[in-house]
Structures are given as C-alpha cells and as structure tokens.
Image 1 (cartoon, one colour):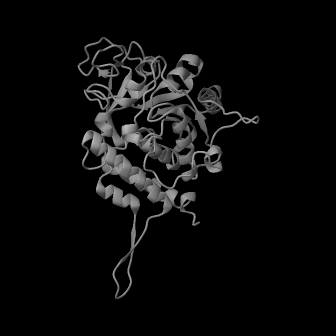
Image 2: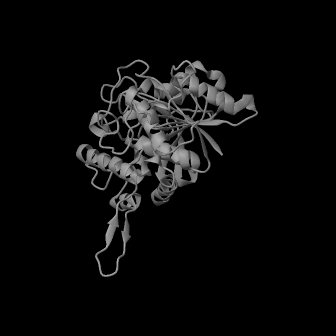
Image 3: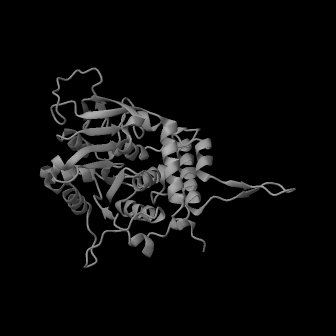
Length: 358
C-alpha cells in the first residue's frame, strides 16, 4: 500500500489525479492540500472539495487550504486554460458554498479551517509513527509552494517521506514561456527548495504528459454511452451517467482551450493524473536520474528546469543539493495508463452521488 498526501490546484487535470488517488487499490489517500495555481487559492480549495464529493471519497479524506501566493513572487493563474474558476465548462458539480462541498474541508471544533501545513504534518506524523509506521509519498500537481514550506519548516519529518513526486517542468520544453512550464514558473524558488532537499524527487515533465492525450476514442470510452436495441426500431442511445457527463464536460472544455492555445488537435493532455499513476505503478514509465536545477534569474528562461543530461556537473550519489537529485520520467505506456484511469471511472460510477436521480 502506498500512503499518499496530494497537493493540488484543481484545475481540470488535477480532478483526474484526485479520482485516481481515491480509487486505485494500492493508494491510501491521507488528505489533499490546495495551493494557488490554475486559479486562486479560494477556487482550488473548493474545487478539490467538490471533486471529493463527486467521487464519493471516504469522509476522512479532507481538503486543507494552503498557500495563496508563491514564496517571493506575485501569484499568476491560468484562466486561458482552466477558466476563471479553475473548472471552466464543468457541469454537474455542487456549488462551492453547498453543504456537500463545505463538508469536505477539514474543520476544527470551533469551526475554523485546518491549514495545509498543519494537516500535512499531522498526517505524516501519524502515518510514520516515528519509524514504526509507513513512509508517505508526497505528490504535487500544482506549484510547489506548500511542499517547500513543509521542507523548510519540518526538516525532522523528511525521513518520513518516501519521495516527492511532482508534475512540472520539461527537458528543453515549456508551455507558458519557450523555456518554462506553468507549475514551475509559478514558484521557481519553491521548486528549487524541493530539488535541493535530501529526499528522492521524481519529475513528471511535459515531455511525458504531452503523450497522455485524451483522444476521441478515449473520450468515447469515458462517456460509455450505451445503445439499446429494439426490434424493428432505430437504435436508442442512452445518455451517460451524471459522473461521466461531468467528466466529459471537463474534457471537452480542456480540449477546446488546448486546441485554441497550443494547437492540440487530438485532445487535451492529462498532465496531473500521471503523478498518482506513477506512485501506484512506476512500471508504466521509463525514467532516468539527472541533476536538475531551476533557472531563477534568466531574462528569457526563468522557471526552466535545467536537466544535466550530459553529466557536466560533478555529483555524488545522494539526493539533494550535491547529487543527481531527480528521477526524470521519460516515457509512458499510454494505453495502459488510460485503461487504469477508465477502470477507476468504472468503479466510481457505481457509487458517485452525481448519478442519483432527482
């Protein structure tokens, strides 16, 4: 069993990461912290809560609101990709202020919210049990601000972390500048803190996530519309369930913005879901260990993840500031990944409250 803390900024593709974290058999999701990124910290928090409701997640999985801005820079968002609220175009989810969504936040007895740092530290301590329990995989699908703050303020808990797995960066590839990927450029200083820490880090870069494209055939499988045969009559198509309609609306909006902004004709890439898929089954991927650093000051390259693919730097065998500090994913078995995702959707479809008839 893999014990996972998920840090996210939902975001269309973050929603699919949450789905996998809830339904993969070998994942025990401890909680979700949220962070500025695809939208404001308000929206990323309520979007995570709405997703947990939609997926009928266990009641003990809660949302813990986190950093509202980067360590040193101003916040930036992605309304051109995700809409102003982070889940543009999505239908079927409860309103942000609904009891169903609000019940998914971690709240103290006095009614105040439990923050991301507190929730993360408590979950890791209780799982690790001073070495008598289990290590935790800390997974990030957004800017790394919350993760960097955890590393800086609780170095004594780093031994309890199995690895830091983050979606971000690219090798020679960007998506918000010619050199930089969105999650990294949102908080490059935080990303460098994570790469410098003496714990294994795993980077899920654009080079790989751009292969996990929801094609038309995958989208049709997701919708799973059934055809009812009636003797002597035309086939009757039965609409998909409420859950599948919600996920289809998510993919449709995401596909439109990715075609408009990036020219993706075949469908949108599910970047963030690959983080959870890696923790569950690293055999889906090929990878190589490199020295990776983040450009912090370049006029044209701030936020670039610089992978030393030719071993120019002298590095030792440790993780962190002096070693080859990052396992970089290089390829994905795409069909197997989508089989896994669609299996999880099948499981969720049996219990999602979105399927309840009015």
